[in-house]
Length: 168
Image (cartoon, rainbow, N blue to C red; front, side):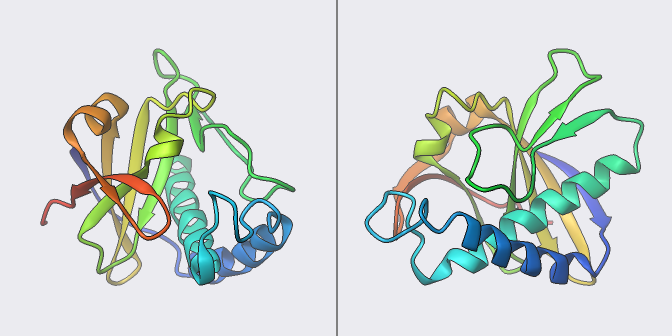
């Protein structure tokens, strides 16, 4: 796991992520309904908002750098099996999955089913951990590291690969 630094993000991202999560959850309600393997219980909105928050922060970070990238839609009629970000002007054009951890988080998680989904083809996991004062710490983890060095645990709704977040 590589620590990449702590960077500020716009405070309005919290409100925007909340609004987009409401829309995303309504549009994807058939995918995340009770009885499916993707069911998130009463945490659906929270999980969706946090995911959107991470993607907004990652896009904001890239927008201030001379890096060409393609980003997946934040909201669509159904979740798409594709990377969140593809870096276009980097050798091998890595496929990136963005994950976001809340401020008090102590662990990073990668869902086992998503990790093993050969249709998604992720090379890098970009973890954004929310910090105080509208800042976020950024970490990069290569997919091979997740599969070989992270612990697989049974969580509330699914299995996930887990790793302790390094202390700053």
